[in-house]
Amino acid sequence: MPFLHKIVTLPLVLLCGLFSACENRTYYADDFENVDKNFGVKPSGGGPADTVSQSFSLKGEFALMSVLEPKNLEIVSVDEFLEGVDSVAVKIVRNKTDFTFSTSELQMPSSVVKLKFSCVFADSPQMEPMEFEEYVSVSANEPVKVKLLDALMTERIEGLVRKEDYSYAEAHDVAYLEVSHLLEWGNDNKYGLENESLPKAELETPIYLYGRFFLQDSTFYQTFKKLSKSVKKNTTWRNVLPSVEIADELVRYYKMDQVGFDDSLYAVSQGGVNVSSSLREDVLLLVETVYGMPSCDSLGRMFTNETEKSDFAGTTFVCDRFNSNYVWRTANNLEETLGACVDGMNDSLYRDGRYACSEKDRNWLELGDWKTFVQYAVELFGDCDVSKEQLMMHADSLYARCENGVWKQMDKVVFYEGSCTLNRENVKVEIAEVGKFVCRNGSWEELK
Image 1 (cartoon, rainbow, N blue to C red):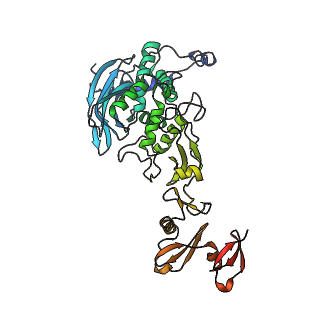
Image 2 (image 1 turned 180 degrees about the vertical axis):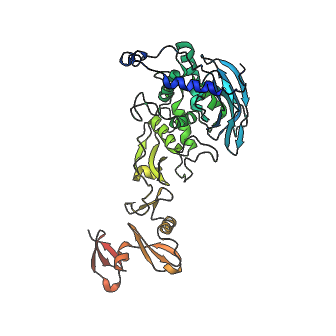
Image 3 (image 1 turned 90 degrees about the vertical axis):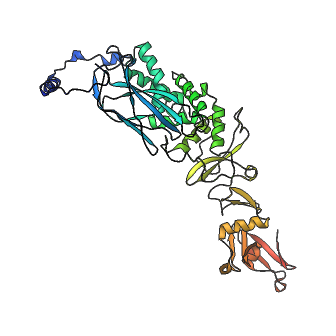
C-alpha cells in the first residue's frame, strides 16, 4: 500500500465489532509475566517497533533557537527496524520567527516516523545547510515539536534497535537517559541524582552552549556530530569536547570578562524562539562547572579561577546582581585589594574614609579626587541646584555641601558642630561614632 494513500473509513459494523471485542475480553492470571522475576530485564518479542498500520494528520513546529532557520523537511515511514520505506516532502510555513508544518491524513506502517530536516544559521555568510534526523511517535495524533535533543539520540536509538533487538520505546528510554548523562546537566552529585533523566526543556539548552551557537556554523555542526556519536553509557561531554575552551568563549561572548558591563549582560539573540527562558542560569552553570566555581548566590562572593589552560586562569570573579539576577563578573584591581563593590553598596560601605563604592560604575572611587567626589555626590544626592544651595548632605563617610551649583566635600566635624572660629578656640566636642575633637587655630583637631 503506498505511503501517502488516503485512508478509507472502516465500515461502522466493523468498528462496532472491534470495540465490542475489546470490551468483552476476559483476562486470566496466566496472561501476565512474573513481575518480580523479570524486573529490570529487557522485554523480548513483539518486534523492535509497533508495526500496526496507523493513519494520522501530522502537524508540528520547530522549537529551535532563533539562530537556526529550518529549510527543508521530509517525513519518512519506517519498518520495524527503523529502515526507511517511503517518504514525502513537507512544506515549512514561516510566520515571522515561527516555523510550522502540517500534512493531510496519511497512512503509515507503524506509530513511529523519521523526520529529516535541514537548517542554516540565519546570519551565516556561508548559509551551508546542516542535516538532522529524529524519530517521533505519532500514534496519539498530537502536534510534535522538532528539537535538537531528539536528533541527538537518533544514531544511538538506531544502534539499539538494529543491533541489540530493542523496541523503539525501549531504545528511546535508554538513549534519553544516556543523553542526560552525556550533557551532564543533572546527573552528577552537584546538580542532580544519578540515573535520573531531566525534562527535555532543560536538556535542549546545553546542546547550543556546547556547540557555541554564536560562532561559525561549521563549529556548531561538528560539535553536534561529536555529541551524537558519543551517546553511550558513562560518557560526558567533557570527555569529547574542549570544555575549557568552550567556557572561555562563553565568558567572552556574555561579557563576563568586562568590568564595565551593563544590563545587557547575558542578552540572548534578539527575537525568535529561544530554547530556554533561563539561559543566563544555564551559562552560569556551564562556566561554574568547568571552572569549579561555587554558585553565584551571595552578593560579594569572590572566586579566583585556577583552571589550567584557561585564558582566564588567575582571574578573580565577583558575584554581583543586575535586575535581580545574580551573575559572575570579573573583579577590577581595586576590588581585589579592597573587596567587592556590588549592587546595594552605593551608600553603605566605604574603606579607610578614602574610597566609596560607586554602584553605577561597580568600582571604588577615591574621594580625594574632586571630579570623582562630585560625580559620586550627584549619584547620592542629585544635582546641586539653586534649591539646594548651602544644603549639607551626609552618607556614611561622605559629607557634602551644595555651593554655587557644585557639591563640595566638607569636614565631618563642621557638618555636625559648625566651623572652628576664634571665639571657639580650645573648645572640645565629642561626636558619637565619629570621635573627640578640639578647636585650635581655626580648624578641628582630633583628640587621640
